Amino acid sequence: MLSFNVNRQFTSYFIEDLLTIKEQVLNYSKRFSTFSFLENHNYNFRKSYDCVAGAGVASHFITSGGAYNFETLDWFIDNKRDWIFGHVSYDVKNKIEELSSSNFDGVKFPQILFFVPEIVFIFSTTSLQIGVFPTLNADSIFTEIISTENKREGNINSPAFNSRFTKEEYIKTIEKLKEHILKGDCYEINFCQEFYALNITIEPVEIYKRLNVLSPNPFAAFYKCDDKFLICASPERFLKKDGNVLISQPIKGTAGRIFDDDEADSAQKTNLYQNQKERSENIMIIDLVRNDLAKVCKEGSVKVEEFLGVYTFPQVHQLISTISGILKDATTFSQILCAMFPMGSMTGAPKKKVMELIEKYERTARGLFSGTVGYIDPEGNFDFNVVIRSLQYNSSNHYLSISAGSAITFNSIPLNEYDECLLKISAMKKALA
Image 1: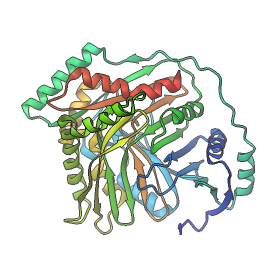
Image 2: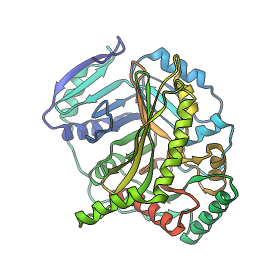
Image 3: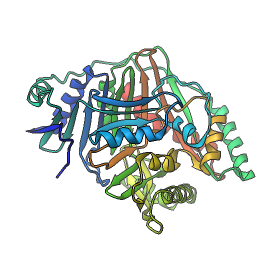
Image 4: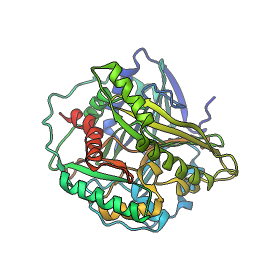
């Protein structure tokens, strides 16, 4: 039985069509300055909920710079004991590791935002629970939601994307990174590039709906923070806390789908599992995650529960490993965050050195890309994704961003890494077409 803040009352409503009610809640959400919609798409990834969402801000913790401390964040979480939604952007690394960043950021998400929503939505196959404070009426909200018409936007002018790297520049950069690996500066580095469009106007909810059709993934998110939007089709979990157990499921290793030939598509999975370069990518991140977990978990409790599992998603096959540990007593949220963030799958190893190289060789700030979006429940359990396969959009300056990356090792073939980036952004570009 779920435990809720005593001031928040939940009412359950029977629903006949889960897909329709999800879209109606998304359309209803447009009125709020802050909204988080987290969707599983029925994947069996140790999910707690099919879908949860939070709308409006009753109270919040927010920062856009370095003038904050993690103890204040812990106080906010512990003091509220309610549903909390929010995000951590990639550049929080600067606070954790005493690094710095100066690359251009076109979208400008706050570094951290956590908020207690005015309204909580919990979806299941046959019901929608709406949780509100006494000042709001759940029945009125539900009536308005189900009366919302699910309009579909017409054709969208497909934006022309620019790249921060030409193909030739990208290949030369990968060769430089391989020189760092050869010198022993690092073993693996996740190098990303941004594709961007200027002076673009989009309807974010409509693009999210389209992306869900093209690429439904287990850690999808529609996230709004004032004029900034995240439209996310992530397949990757960063961290899940269930009681005193902490779970991480890094992805490393990618193979494209072959849609018109089942036998060839199955062979792709086999080839991915047997590919030594792809396996070594994942194994190095397993070691990094085990080391990070050991900082906050009881001695001897960290273990690899699944080693190099092959999972199929709409666009790609991926290698995923599952690592878990039992948390030390009285470990705070910020202690977990500082031990684990940024996630190893989006940095490489050793983590601090590769983050310095990322800052040197990448040409834009990652922003919320490579960060995380998720929720914390009233009992302190949480689930956070890895923000990849995503669009970031600022509706005030009309800047649209898609980033993608790959793990660079000494055995990387630069042209293959470039093609992998194009594969990873394909669903987002189709959603805009």
